[in-house]
Length: 81
Image (cartoon, rainbow, N blue to C red; front, side, top):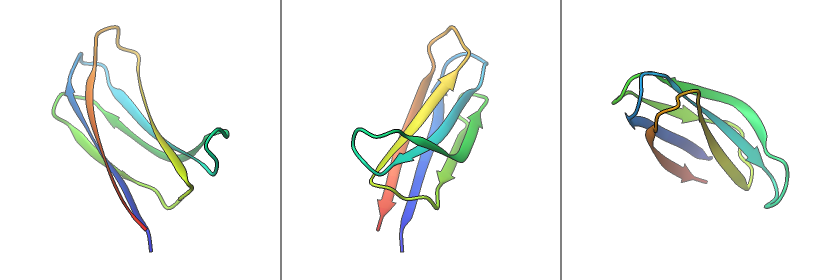
């Protein structure tokens, strides 16, 4: 059994949201595919946990925002296979 989770917290920044998406890939230099796990952090101090039933050898967490000010986000990974 596998457990894969990401704890993501917006630490500081403007009022515009930060969006987090999870992508996976089976090989080191391959094409990453978004797996549909998405969270949006609106305010400073808000946090979300993402979990994915898709497991491949490589995983990325994408952070995006439309803000023109700096955004500070913490990401923690927990994985067990």
